[in-house]
Image (cartoon, rainbow, N blue to C red; front, side, top):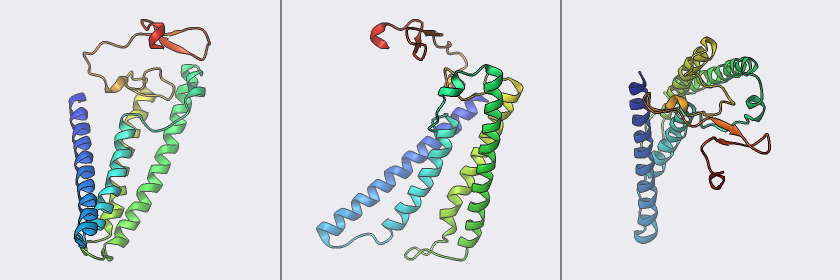
Length: 199
């Protein structure tokens, strides 16, 4: 299961890298053609815009999978584990509601976009709105899986405030990182085997 998740994650990363590379090449090539030769690629702007939209939402999905979205975890980190679990469940339910609204709106816009077309390439504008549909479904599944792990107390579940948010991404055979040791100011922490130079 972990290998499948890692494989899907790698596919997503390579897809995003390919989208970014093509987008940069098209935009740069269009600028060069326009300023040096007085011509350009008419479809470059539409294709680049479409790729950028997909790149953003695919990146949001990958960031959710890796727990890289911005968040303030100072309060949660100081709460007892049972209270932190309740807070995590509530926050996950709110996230699911927000993702449902996002999915519903994206699907509505996708249906509307089926009858409208881009100016140059004449592809359905639904391609833009669809960039929100598939990532929304993927993010809902990710949140549901993590919510189930939190409720069941699985060690693979991630709760805000965990000392090692990347633990579920590690290889199963990889040893756990050094335990956290409180030093000096109660608000500071460092691995037990860290030197002062590393802190």
